[in-house]
Every structure is written in structure tokens, then in C-alpha cells.
Amino acid sequence: MGLYDSICTAFLHHTLHDARVLADQSEVMTVMSLPDQPVPAKILCYFHHLTYLVQRANGLVDIVPSGEVVVGFFFPPDYLRSTDPTLFLKLITLLEPANFFHPNVRAPYLCPGARLYPAMPLPELLWHTFDILTYRNINLDERDALNPPACRYLRQYPEMLTRLHSPALRTAPLHVTHLDTPLGPGRE
Amino acid sequence: MMTPPYQDRNLRLGAIRFIGQTDLLSIQQKTIVIAGTGTLGFPVLEHLTIHGAQLWLIDRGVVELHNLGTQGFATSQVGQPKVEARRERIRQLNPDCAVQGLYMDIEHLGLGALQQVDLILSCLDSFAARLTLHELAWRLGIPFVDAALDGSGKHLYGRVAVYDPRQPEAPCMLCSWDETTYSKALAVSGTTGCPTWVHLLDHPQEAPPTLAISSMAGVVGGLQTIQALRLLLGDSAVAGRELIIDVQHTLLHMTICQRTPRCRFDHRVWALHTLEPGTWQQPVQALFTRAEMDLGGAITLHPHRRTLATQLFCATCQTARPIARFAHTLQRADCHCTCGGLAQPVGFACLAAFDRRQASAFLNTTWHQLGLPANEVVTASTARGQERHYIITA
Image (cartoon, rainbow over all chains, first blue to last red; front, side, top):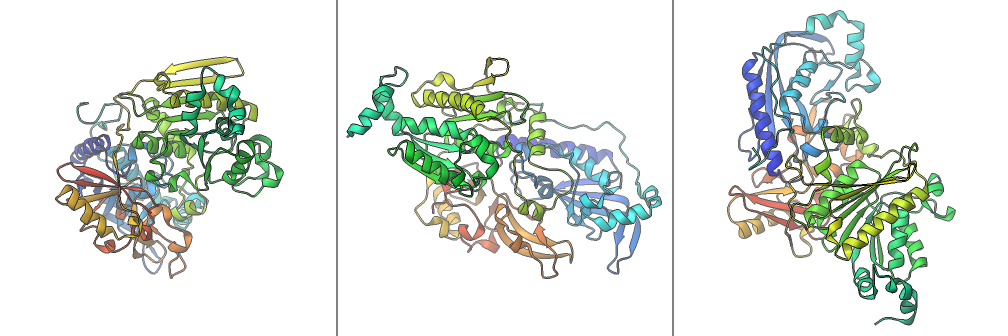
């Protein structure tokens, strides 16, 4: 930890490559690494043409029929073997829009649920995030959700969910490099 | 010079062929860390006290009533830090035994603090703490004996494993871990639902209670002590061996582990450079200057195991506040927002490493003020791949 070791660096390069392959197949996603970084530890993902809810400053909830959502991913140096319960809080940050209205989102925090595991490849993270941003994965139990008002709203207006599902434009199987494939210098 | 009581005390111990008088002296000059002084740590520290080794005890726990049935504390010790209670016991058993107690979380221990240690014994009940200690031991090149008890209360199982980073191609603890083990380790750490960062500050990681009887701990702790003594006496054959003890079926299995190229750990032992005392109270800028002199070129600093929060964000009023603090040191009081909400670190704004430009906001802040533990290691690296590991000395 601390220093990005050769194994983690190789993993990040591989997983960024896989994410770009996925993004190239999709019309709803653009993936880029932040410049000036020795390792691609900070990744920006732009999700386009999403239908989502926003809460205005006056408290009213509006539907955005086709908008853009920006999510940042930060991979800490111990990502491959982390047991840190705050891992997902560090990992995924909703950058825009700040008023995104969702039970699992309280911008800039986004809870992907308990499915996260160390060394989860970026394409899988993107799918989990996409499932949340498109309201396929929602937690309607406000005792355990980041945004309880959104839970109440969606329970009150369940028909809204049918309007919110954006199409998933995946045309090919998900391709990811898992750690079962040896990584690191001299291991490929 | 041996005092007569010393000679009397060790007369029979020195006659044991496995140890011998000369080796006994060498054991007594070694410094051994025992992390975790509960159910398993109890027999281990008693055995090593009898041998007269110099002990460092690390435990963040306090003696509680429910510890009395399994961990060998006296009723009068309830409420005391466990390390203090154990020190009393050690002084009674062997006044010649030098003992130091560190009443703290392993996570808050600086890597450099363990630099002079000869052996590390893990008697911990938490996956996360064990993983941290394993990495500390490996980076320092210190042999590590890990032991565990089945704490489910359903079986009489135990495990003792020896890892020796001094040996080339020796396996580490993570060499035998697969994806399921990592997921289990994260799940045990308590990641369920949508906890907030502040919630986790209020409720630090707690391992589930160890439901094991003290006699089982005696069996496993005894084996752990023997493996530790063998290591100290130079028996290199124990490295990479894992013993599984199944007392219920009277079975003892041994597994010989091998290093795997699929391991997620890079197995590097670090050569540490100790900086002059007081560096901890110096600004970050001073280390940049020092590293630039030592390595040349533009420097990036990587604090070991720490991420630096540079922004706290209040989701209630949607305002951000700049901060420069290592995330693990944040307290609830640091996170209060003027609107009454709670501001938390923003993951994407955290820094695992920083160059001069990224550190411009906290160049004149001391490492102490940033929340770095004393004697922690900060690695300086250059774009050419040179690196140096500095101990930020208190």
C-alpha cells in the first residue's frame, strides 16, 4: 500500500484498457484517465443520454429525459487487497449533477451496495454504476439508504421507475481482465 | 553477567537440547512483537515471558467482563487496557523480562516503529489487522508467525503459519488467498448497506467475538511459540509451513505453501532511511527538498497506507471545504458543517501520492498536523523509477 506497486499498476492499465473497449462499444459512455498521473488511478466516466431525476433547490423533483452524468473513480494503492469498509466511498464519486435524486446517491457519494469486492475490474464497476444511475439497482429501505427522501419518493411514485430505465446499449459480452490472469512485469 | 536467580531460573530451560544455554541467551536478546493479547495472545506471551524474551505488546482493547471466561484476566483488571493488564502479569512471572505495551490500533502504528524488532507474532482476531501486520512485517523483512483460532464456537480448529520475507521466493500470507478470501475479508470488515464515512468513524471496525476456549488457545498458542522459537534459533525449514490443528478429530495437517505468480502482493522488502529526529514536526516541504537532493529530479511522495483527504463535502448544504488530513485520523468533530450536517471526505479528491504542485496547499504543514503517525514511512519516487523510503521520525 502507499506506493502503487507493479502489480497494481499493471492491473490499472489493463482495467482501463478493458473499460475503454467497453466504452467504444457503447453509445452511453466515455472513459478517460486524468492526465499527469504516473498510474491511471483516477478515471473519469461520462454517461450520456441518461434519464434521471433531479431535486431542484425548491425541493421539487424533476425528470431529466436525456442528460449527462459524470462519475470519478479513484483507485487507492491497496485496491487489490483492501479490507477497508470505506473502500467504495473512496472509489466512486458522483461529480455531476450535484442534485441527482436516487436512494443510493447523495452527491458526491454513491453507494454501489454490498457487491463490491477488492480488485473489481473497472468495466464491472461501470456496470454497477450504470445500474444505479439508470435506477435498475435501488435501495428502497430508507433505514439503509444514502438518500431516504428518494426512497420515500420512489415508493410513493413507483410508476416513475418505468420511465427512468435508459436503454443499456451493450452489444457484446463484457470483456474484463480478472486477476486470475497473471499481471505485472515479466508475468504476461 | 548472570545473577544467581537468573541461573537458577534457567537451569533446566538451558539444559533442553532444543534450546541450550547459548541459544537461550540469544532468545533473551531478541525483541518480539505480540499483536493481540486476548484469547490467543495470552498463552503465547506467558510462554515467551518464561523464556525471558523482550516483548512488545500491541492491543487497542480494554479488559471487559466477558473477557474473563476465556482470556485469563483477573476481575480486578476489568477496565484496564489489556496491554497494561498483561504487563502486570509478565512482571509477576519474570521480572527480568523487558516488556513494552502499545495501547493502540495496528492501523495507527508507523512502519518505522517496528524497525528494530526481530520477530512479529500475530494473535489477532481481525482479517484487516492481520493483513496490515503482515504487510508491515514483510516490508521490514521481519519473520512473521500468524495464528488463528476458529472463533465460531462450533469447532476446535486452529491454524499456525510461518512467513519469512528474508528467504528468497518464500510465500507470503496472500499467496494462498483467492478472490473469495478477499471478498470474505472485506465482508467481515463490515461493509453492508450504505454506511457513511462518519458512521464508520463512530463505529470503528470490530471483528466478531472469538468464541473459543482458553485450552484451545493454549494448544494453538503453544505451537505458535514453538514455531517462533524455531525461527529465532535459525531453523529456516519452518518458513512457508502452515499447520492446521483439528483437535476435535485429533488431527494435525501441515501444508507447504509456495509463492504464486498470481499473488496480489509484490513481496518487496524495503530498505528504510531513518531521517533525523523531529522530522515528524517538520513541514512536508522539507521532505521534498531532502528527496530532491537524494534522488534528483521531480519528486512524488507516497505516504505508506494512507490517503490524504483534501476536501470535505457536506451533502446537506452541498458545500465543499478544503482540508489536508489523512483520512484515518478524521474525527466526527472535524466533520461538522456550519449547516448542522456532516461533511465527509470526497473519494475522488483524496490523494494517495502527491508532487510539489499537488501539495501546494499543505507544503508548510507538518506531518504531525496532517495526521501521519509518528515513524510512518513516506516513499519518495522519481519519474525515472528511483525511490527511497524515509522514516518520518518523531
